[in-house]
Amino acid sequence: MIKEVEIILSYKVEIPDEKIPAMLNDYRETIDPQADEDNLFLTVAGGHMGGDGEFTEGIGNLKEHGVQVEQYGIETSVDGWSG
Image (tube, rainbow, N blue to C red):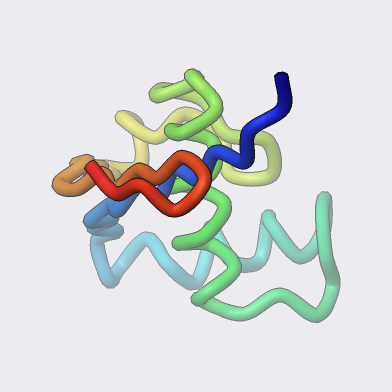
C-alpha cells in the first residue's frame, strides 16, 4: 500500500537583532554567499525540525546566540484526509 502523507510544521523563530549581522556573515562564509536574513530563519527552523535543537550548521550553537525556536502548529493529511 502506498499513501501520500503531508505534514506541515509551523515554527516561530526569534533571533536577537544584534546577533543577525554576525550570524549572517558566518552563514555566508560557510554555507551560501548569497544568503539573506530569511535563509537564517529557515535554516534554524529546518535544523530544529531535523532534531537538532541546539546546533545548526553554518550558524552554530543557538543557545549561545540567544535564538529561540517554538513549534506552534502541525497540520497533517493522508491521501486527502485532514487531521
